[in-house]
Image (cartoon, rainbow, N blue to C red):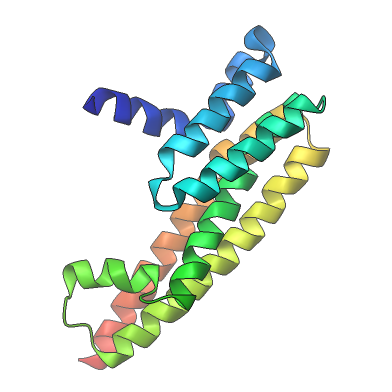
Amino acid sequence: MRGIKWLGMLAALGWPILVFALHGTLGSWPLLMMGAGLLAWRIPQARLLALGVAALLLAAGGMGHAELGMRAYPVAVNAIMLAIFLTSLAQGMPIAERLARLREPDLSAAGVRYTRRVTWAWCGFFMINGTLASWTVLYADLAVWSLYNGVISYGLIGLMFGSEWLLRQRLRRSLT
């Protein structure tokens, strides 16, 4: 069972590259079905929302736009992540604070404010990344779509994580 979870995670992360490699052989519909299944399965924090978005992707395929639905997977992931992060800001503890409290259960008031700003920053990231992913769905060929959504966007996520980590270290040093 653990191997299936890892395989699912790798498929979800490598979706654009998988699509690029298999689209010529399998076509849009089988890949759309796989993507919708991955979406519904791999985001347990928002299962109902993920199922709804997966249904929308399948509906696009049913209306004759299977490739569009298949390529919309990264847009859907960004939209779902944005919804998760925004919801956490409105209802209870923001995502970044939850993660911070795993290491520091007694987070200071300044830490709470900082994690709220970090959660907002991630919301902005998901909006921008989702917009760029949308552009690639609508206007770019499959190679450019795969490059942005399977390589560049992950580099941007890494840059966001790294920048936030450096900023957090700097803020910690200034507080001590």
